[in-house]
Image (tube, rainbow, N blue to C red; front, side):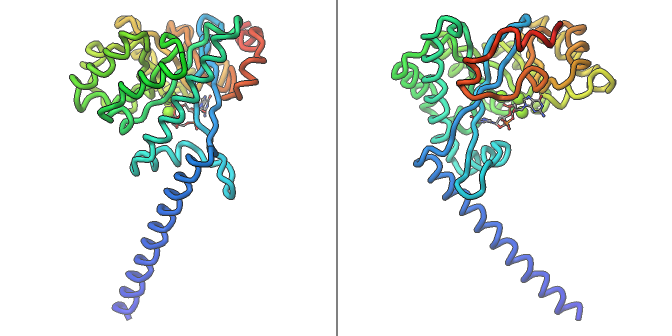
Length: 282
Ligand code: C2E
Ligand code: MG
Ligand code: MG
Ligand code: MG
């Protein structure tokens, strides 16, 4: 009996494996098609500094023809594993640059910075810098308006190579932000070795900082560290007034989160009233 059950469970396991492999194959195919058929679009989440709209973060959205909205938290890691992230990343960069150029032509919005998320596999490509330069030339974007968000894990493997790539782009005016700070490698020694201008505290540390003593301590320490290294520090995922008040008490002046605004369409960004974002501070 036990033997039979054992065999059954193996068969069950095999068919599960098969189904999973099939699903992954399907997702890869769907992503290929999404790239070809332009099923992606970008939304832009406001970043507030000194109580004003300082910039936005471009975030990708995928509307799957049958399954509807699929979160980037799901398909970006998958695209990373399969290499599809390179084509997706190229599209995101081009689209964000084209949007920045449109904003540059609008007197009210020409100061806006746009941050673009770069994935590890994308950054590791030998021609990453060349492709970036190509994209900036083609679109005519002002590189000073462009910020690249990198994550800790992708920087430490090859610190010299990383520094060289960042340095070339920095010379052209591009700035760099360290995203999801605190969730990756905890080695801090690379922080001052790389041309970073900004550090984003991951939202898991911001959550309930007004009451959670651990998060409070971690966030306070990160803000102090960033300040002493002369890095701008942005608190991600600020959802409540109490979180904002605590962050301000710690000396943080830049924020991103649902308290201020969800990610918006390009049209909604243009329609934003400066007062809409500042009223949170009143
Ligand atoms: P991320 O770069 O850390 O982006 C911030 C995420 O937090 C976004 O989720 C944003 O919608 C969400 N968020 C912002 N404020 C709040 C808040 O107050 N509360 C909560 N609960 N969430 C908030 P999203 O758009 O689902 O993106 C998830 C992740 O997917 C991003 O994390 C980023 O790692 C990746 N991603 C998104 N777009 C791109 C892209 O174009 N390229 C690459 N390589 N990765 C991307
Ligand atoms: Mg980001
Ligand atoms: Mg983040
Ligand atoms: Mg994140």
